[in-house]
Length: 562
Image (cartoon, rainbow, N blue to C red; front, top):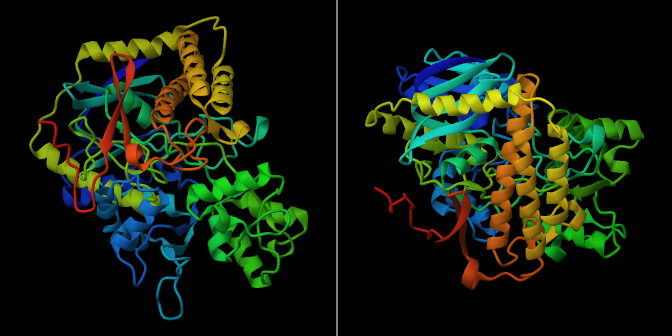
């Protein structure tokens, strides 16, 4: 491989929602600051918005306040959130929404020119082109260099301060060492840890993007950053087979969750996100499945609206209706839970950050799905955090010089990648080890097969087996740069799996049914576990840290460090 050494003021890793908006914010506030965005795919169609979206799910609608949004998210997460992060995010939601509209996003309006809402916190949009709009705005910035098809793998850190990061081109034989005064990590959450609903040819049809492998989490874990709340997994309630969103049905046409007997069961178990999944699991276990969202009897106008809405984000659901010859008004929509994911945009999983979105590594900032403590971000929340992180990074580089990545460290990471490229006669390939990993997590760490339940002995077995698979990755070999990317993606997922297992074991209660259903501790325990479960990799072992919850009027700012 060719080795290229680059230098920049701010390095943004991940060109999704948060990454693009961070670059836009830096350019608007400091047009002379040099920025490099490294994106594994292409920023025009990358990240969670790659295929589009039909609503903005985080907005302060008329009659509501940012604090109302904080209260909603806290209730949904059973108290395990950072109110300071939620408030600083929610105060930006409407401003970033207005900016999106100025960039060309079509937000639906009524006859009076007001935004059309969908529920208490949502706006209807025509969002198929939302990501190209963000990408085009980035490409117009003179101080921003976009490097597409760059898979970033590791940070360079000295004495808990960021120096830069390493990666490689997935299409050309080029390895990169990028030195930066500050780094913003925006890579997204982790999919593919567990066996998905659909296997074989259709295994990619999952709720969360299959190319989001937990890279940002893994980079932080290996660098010694403190992480939080991985045990609050996210399991989406989705339309069966297509894994299409259910919120459009639940909020758009007020569809209730019903069992096979036609009984509405959603109020029986509760209406938080995890409770909706748990209720569906329990109804099936008790012989009252399959479960549905009740759409029978809606109007033909609502039929048409649903067909169009799903074309914006999950066309397979529209195709399924058309192929069956029955519209939603003629048949209820069967629902199921997905496999678990780690994603800080919906739950509180991710880096432990302060209100500036700085991690416990100086000069490393996190935004979007990788930033912990602040659930229910969705699109606009990721934009808001990108904006906050960008502003903080600009302040940071004003008082910190560039620490160049040293040659010895570059050589170590370069040699690691070359070892995989030059290997021969591997006993296993990447796909086989990934399938083994997903099987272990599904059976022993609370996957679909066990109805999301686990106990301590199962978790111990999962940890042992994941460690064995992790050791086998050292024997893999790659015939090209794309296969090299697959090896690193597998390693990232395995790193996240080990941290997840440690977090699941550490929270000895069941606070979120299905999300973290601990059979050894089936009850909620506020006395001992109304706290954050954090972790840090030290000397090759995951150290668990319990931190008290941040109170209503508090801001956490990493006060314990110099």
